[in-house]
Image 1 (cartoon, rainbow, N blue to C red):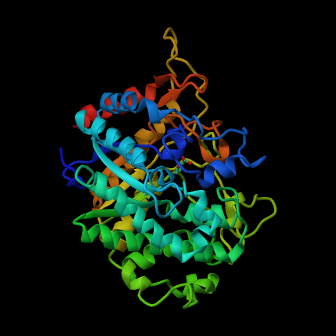
Image 2: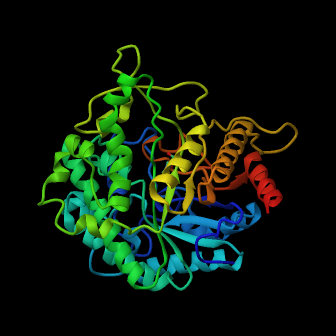
Image 3: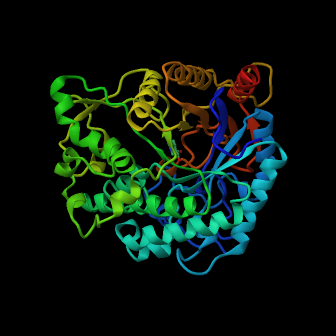
Amino acid sequence: MSLHLPDGSTLAYGAATASYQIEGASTEDGRGVSIWDTFAARPGAIRDGSDGSVACDSYHRYEEDADLLAGLGVGWYRFSIAWPRIVPEGTGRVETRGLDYYDRLVDALLARGVSPTATLYHWDLPQALEDRGGWLERSTAEAFADYAMVVHERLGDRVGVWATHNEPWCAAYLGYAAGIHAPGRREGGRAHVAAHHLVLGHALAAERLHAAGVTDVGMALNLAPFWPETPEAEAAADGIDAIRNRLWLGPLVDGAYDDGLLAVAPELADPAVVRDGDLELARGSADWIGINYYTPFRPAVPDPSIPVHHELDAYPGAAPVSIVVREPRTDIGWEVDARGLEELLVETHARTGLPLVVTENGAAYPDDRLVEGAVGVIDDQDRIGYLRDHVAATERARAAGADVRAYILWTLLDNFEWAEGYTKTFGVVQVDPKDQTRTPKASYRWFAEHIAGAG
Ligand code: IFM
């Protein structure tokens, strides 16, 4: 069992989760308050009024979850670390009981032959840092690198593959522009400053992790394949493409923000924000790139008959466009088209030359169909179809030369789906919200059989 990035001789498989979405135990063992605790308590912020205080209770049930991973036959488990469990105030005092939890989790995985890969930031910022300005402040990036090293010092002997951020576009723009994710702020173009500080936090952490001997530091990006409806739409959507895609790869590959991006995000040309050396530090800081893919993105010239996607507030400075969403769609309204994943993998490999991991891919479907004659088994053929098509798309990208090392599905367990609460289920294992009982779905069996057959 290797702790390094899989070598790519065959496609490796994994499953992913994130701390706030599954752990619960939000006040246990000295955990500090996170921005998601605060945001979820805001009336109307979460569709069903829920929060992550109990979630899947994985803080206590991690052994059972490790058994589920072993039963699935995955080689990898991608989990995230809750920063407020480790450094409850964001800086300063370290909570060893938080580190002990991840220590136990990592050991439980290794004992079952599952390699751990840890994501350091999957959106649960300590509230104390948000109170000091959150990602709008440069000091948050510096605090992030300090926290990363605390975690590495404890787990680095058993965790080799690290992701700094998960989907930093969401953290910056859903959090600080659209305001539909924590911390729920609507700061317009200031969200570009948050984006730069996320890039900087990654670069500072990567520099120190590399100095400590880590060779596999990456970032999980929700890049979007752009499929404009018309040539006019392509031009109109350039600003959105810049913010969603180029803002992240530009610093990592070229050590620069491109001119088209700077035209819509002048904050990124401000030398007080992007200081000398920041972008040079980012260049070459990633050893691999994670791709989180769910759906393609079809911009159209503004048309009142086509709804403007609700996330458009999340592209400050960019020209507004309408977004066409074709059928079929999942329960969360996202168009299903696996060719988007294939294209993203091929293009991202061509752009970066780096090894890639599909760090997330999966689908929300209403899990209300039971297998006839069986008790409690959800017959989620739609999810099986989605996964089958996207695994095949990943294999096609590999055949076309993209260096894709692993396919990690989202997600092991039905969990707290952010602003959607518990109303949208992506898991291959159902979790009863009343008592956290876990029941594998038909998709769990399908994925296990696929992995066994592939192996
Ligand atoms: O649940 C999320 C995850 O936390 C980040 N990527 C998208 C998933 C589905 O919305």
